[in-house]
Amino acid sequence: METIKHMRVARATTSSRIAMTLGIVVLVALVAMPWWATSGNIRWAIELCCYIAIAQMWNLLAGYAGLVSVGQQAFIGVAGYMLFVLAQNFGVNPFVAVFLSLIAPAVLAVPTYLLLRRLDGPYFAIGTWVVAEAVRLATSNIDYVNAGAGMTLRVMTQYSQHEREVAFVILCAVLLLATIGGSYWLLRSRHGLALTAMRDNPVAAASQGVNVGRLRFCIFVAAAVGTGLAGAIYYMAQLRITPGAGFDPFWASMAIFIVMVGGIGSIEGAILGALIYFFADRLFGEFGSAYLIVLGLLTLVIALYARGGVWGLMQKLGDHPWFPVRRKLIVEERA
Image 1 (cartoon, one colour):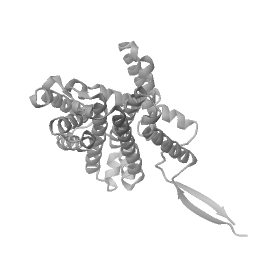
Image 2 (cartoon, helix red, strand yellow):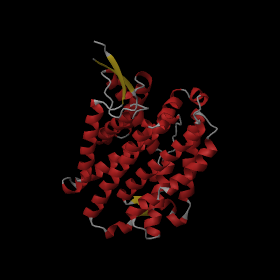
Image 3 (spheres, one colour):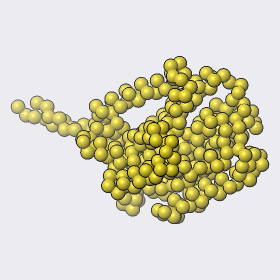
């Protein structure tokens, strides 16, 4: 009897189906938190979601586009301030203003990239930090936004605590879908193939027809918008923003730590790194500067001896991706 070989391309795996199911459960549990969790736990969930989103956007920049930025706080700050100005000064519904505030990081990202696009490596990184500092200093001297004193979102007092919590968890669910889901959708598309090729060798990718410059520009703007959305949600939950907080370099160092420890160039790594950072901060944050030194040393050790991060070490035990973006050729023999 002749055996016929049938070939098919598989993308989903058992582990990805389990991860997808758990992801849906987590999103449902997140949206339902105002009915079963305490206000403190909801604040923690908002913070964790923002960490994951910011790290995922930085991972997309550095892990795929090859753009190492240490100035992402610029987009967090301008989105936060745009939200406060729209809601407090113009009377826009604050929950609508969250999405309108994304105009600010998108507008800022365009000239920033055009200004820095000819720089590579550390020069690009330093350039992004300079831009962030320039925006911080400018904001600190604008009387319209109370200069260095910052702004308070007093309009939120017209909503009850329960209404605010319901809106916040819905916004966090949208944030995760936009950053994690958007990254996954992008990496599975034909643009994702171009991004992967560009990550491995941008010169070779360009020789095969990939428009490296245009793709980097699009990723830079998209990452700015995603980061800005996280910043707007975070500071709306805080009800206050100042130039020192909104444009704090801590945001960049946090994203770098999360991605380096979790695993650069993978969606799973950013999630794991954010969880590690969040719980480490809750458990050991009281130790102050000593705790920060330990985090820095841990990042250095990971960079030197385990460049794939925690997710890379897990993958050595078995190939079980949560968000598979590769295509696998499966050969099946049929009689």
